[in-house]
Image 1 (tube, rainbow, N blue to C red):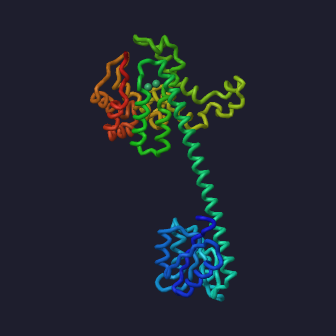
Image 2: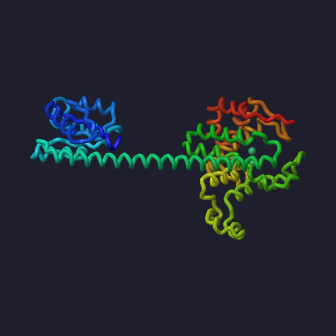
Image 3: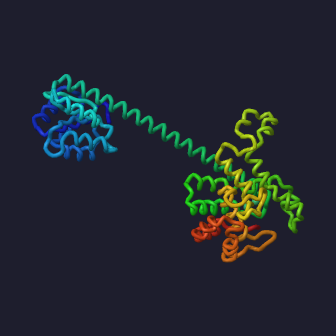
Length: 375
Ligand SMILES: [Fe+2]
Ligand SMILES: [Fe+2]
C-alpha cells in the first residue's frame, strides 16, 4: 500500500451510490483511488486480483449480500486484514450488531454524510497503514531471527564436525568413518519414523561417538597386535571418558576458576544443551548391546538410549564394511548377514528392521564417502 495513494474498493448494487463515492473522493482527496463493484461476487474477484487498503460495502445486494462478502473476506488469508466499512440504515441496530460480529471494522450510516464518510474511511486507512507497518516489522524481525538461528546451527555443526575430525587424528584408520556413521544414523532414525529434530540431532552428534578415545593412551589405541584383557578394559573406557567429556563435572569446572560457565553443567547429568546432551548419551551408550552384554553399563533393551542403539548399528555396519587392523573389509552380503544375525542380540530389532527397509540408501553411503586412498 502507499500511504498517499490508498486503494479503496466500493461495493454497492446502486450505480448512484458508486457514482457519489467516486465524486466525493475525486473532489475532496488528493490521490485516493476508487474501485467500484456492483456485487459481492465481483468484489471478491477484484480482491483476489488487487491489493486494497479499505473496502466500503453495502449490505443489501442481489446475489451474495454484504454479510456474506464480509465473512468471505475475513476467512480469506489474503484479505482478512483489509478494513471493511459497512453501510447500514440509521436504525438497523440488529444489522449493525451482526456486521460488527462478522468483523466489520466500522459502520457508516445511510444516507451517507460527507464528514462522517471521510472520518470513517480515514481512520480505516490509518489502521491499515499501521498494521501494514507492524507486519512488515514483524517480518523483518522474523527473518533476522531465522538467519541468526541458521548461523548458530551452522556454528554448532561446524564445531561438532571439527571436534570429530580432531578425534580422527588420534585413530589413523578411520578416514570417512564418522561421516558415514552420521549418514547411516540419519537414515536409521528416519526409518524408525523419528521426528525431524531427532533425526537432525542424531546426524549431528553421531560423529562424536568415539570422542572419548582422546583419553586413551597411544600405546593401547594404536597397538597393532592383540590387546590384553587389561588393555581391552582401558579401551572400553572411551565410552565413559566420552560421557564425562560431554557431561562435565561442575566441581571440576568450578575448580578451574570457570565459575561463570559452571552453571552450564548439571551435577552428574547430561548437559542442558540438547546437542551435547545427546552426544553424551551416544558416547556412553554406543557399545551397549540389546541383550545386555555390552559395556560400560551392561544396559539392555530400551534402557539403552535410542540414539545410542542407532549409532551402535551404524558404527558396527561401517566397521564391517571397512578394513581394520584386525580384519579385512567384508562384502555387503557378509556385513548385512551379520547385522541380521545380531538382531535381538547385539542390536535393537527395530533398528535392524529400519536398516533392511532402507538398505539401498545405506549401501549408497559407502560409495558417496569412500575411504580416501592412502599415499
Ligand atoms: Fe566406540
Ligand atoms: Fe566408530
